[in-house]
Image (tube, rainbow, N blue to C red):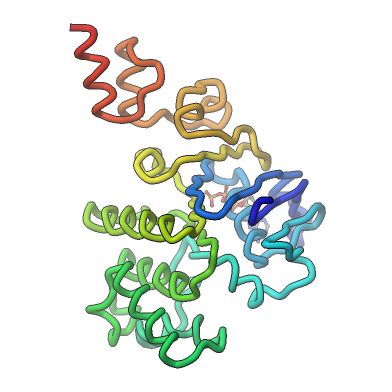
Length: 268
Ligand SMILES: Nc1ncnc2c1ncn2[C@@H]1O[C@H](COP(=O)(O)OP(=O)(O)OP(=O)(O)O)[C@@H](O)[C@H]1O
């Protein structure tokens, strides 16, 4: 049985706008999944239903046997952590250490465990040198890692990263890749929302495509990035290497540079 399941889940905002319409998706432990689609497709609304920040107007969201209707967001955050798109919507402490320790402390973990969780999360996110700093004295890109650390410190089974690559440089992208791999290896499910198809190719296995408030495809990344009909419907582009292969008329399933090199060698 899946760890997290959305069944015909819809959500309408208080102004009546239906942002998500009968979405079905499910996730197992240890998966890495990217949710992609145009702005306004309903991605953020969907993931906010996964950690109880929003409760479905219709349908169900069930996490590890818990229907989110029956639990508070604080209770659900033990199982599913959500890193906000904008770190400034999440940060509310005056120093990085306090920001990261807030979650595990709220869980009532023993003091030693809180410390261990904070240090592990801070190391993975690369924020150890800034633990005493005020988060608002750090650049935006580093504030994002502070919020990632504060969710990792909760040790939830599922971690959702909403647009983690926005404004990040190469070392930061490497740090992100490393933390995703480490958490996946620990059996955690990592779900991201992103517009960065290279980030998807390099770090995720499965891709869910949303368009116009619904899921239009859910498959292995290779199948998605070579389904040109789905990409067109969602107004998405293939990753660079796939596009190059496509325009050269070779390798109708390639995603990575070594695969393109192999194909080119065959055509010499
Ligand atoms: N609080 C709100 N009240 C009313 N409508 C909202 C609210 N928040 C979002 N919406 C609308 O719901 C739709 C879906 O928004 P959502 O943020 O889920 O999309 P998204 O796919 O995540 O897009 P983005 O990539 O821009 O974050 C958008 O049209 C948005 O304007």
